[in-house]
Length: 266
Image (cartoon, rainbow, N blue to C red):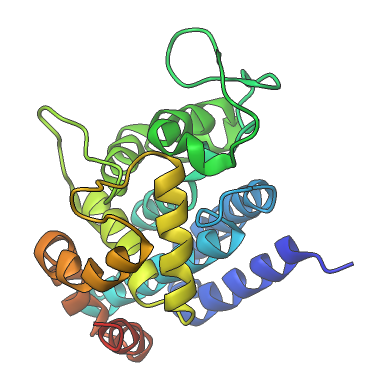
């Protein structure tokens, strides 16, 4: 039987070893922590029933996160252990709350979706139906897992999780958008736009967002219109969130390849 979690872990560690892992002893220690975080995330995402927020998406976004860190190293000469851990924790876990049953307080059809007691969720829907609650649930997941809670700066990671969702809506009010939060949001967008199976990913993204009730039918009446209008939507709504990160990725050959792949879809 194919162990997809093991395959994802191997690929993640390959990218890690080719980017920042051997910068210095402190970053090597941080890399060991990140490897354990990746295994925790991949093990959960292997059970996801969401079309879009799958193990494949978790691997894709985390690999791009590592390429962003490598580009930061090339630009600045160094990345700190704190930057490595907080960025990768944010990327690996910003979507994990979409998975039903991932929290300690989840119980069958009753899922923890707010600070109140768990609420009944229709079991006939896939995990994509949890999209609107995933930021709250992702932060709760980090607090529930002691290894994550003790090794991350929860304030930084929490802000990044709140800002990561580029389609489900950004929290209202006075939002602090720091470097980590900006990078995590950009990574989510770049992962979708640069995917090797872009056409399929667009269908998966649309169907997942539609199941979650996030498709504005005034803008996208159906899948065909979504696909026809998406490039315009990207340039108008999403490009401002990735412009700086595109320039950053150009610092490395791997980053330039990602950017080139993304532009080939525009």
